[in-house]
Image 1 (tube, rainbow, N blue to C red):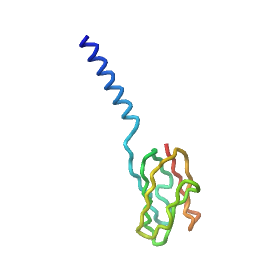
Image 2 (image 1 turned 135 degrees about the horizontal axis):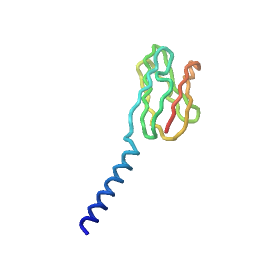
Image 3 (image 1 turned 30 degrees about the vertical axis):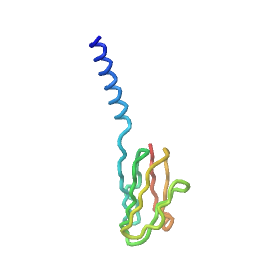
Length: 107
């Protein structure tokens, strides 16, 4: 009987370890705005991850994914933080400089 209980407990512990490893802890990612570019221009994150947009350019920028997020005006040296809530692929731009484009894939 003890052997069966030990095996059952060991099996339960292994299943718990597997389920915990499939849900990684949230991470923080940084998108640097510099040289009129989002760096990286393509970013893959998980739901729950945080993305910090950091403007290191000498002019204001923003990051806008229509219907998903809008950083507002980011002056030089300012940052804005977004927490990924919905899965999907989101294209975003700087509305001040529409040639600046980025893409965020949320898994």
